[in-house]
Amino acid sequence: MTTLAEKIPTMTDADLNSLRANATRLAETGASTQVMAAADILPVIDTEIARRAALPKAAKAPVKRAAPKKKLPPVTGHQTALPSS
Image (cartoon, rainbow, N blue to C red; front, side, top):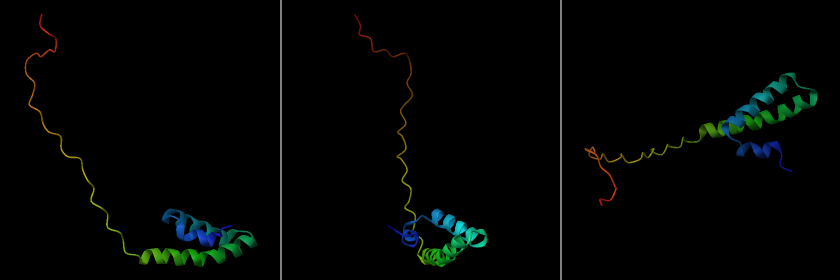
């Protein structure tokens, strides 16, 4: 079974920040086992956050826009597709 510390590198930034907030809360107000677990995992979380902050920011790819639609000349008069008899 995968431990929480092994899952941390695969977490999204939002999940990592949420985990850190929860671990901080448990370190202050949790039961004794929760306090110990939070104290063990907080350094791992902080290390991963620092590693991600040190990575160069990826340049965003330019957004491709659809080609503008060609303007058609305005239709004048009444047109019908009925065959003449």
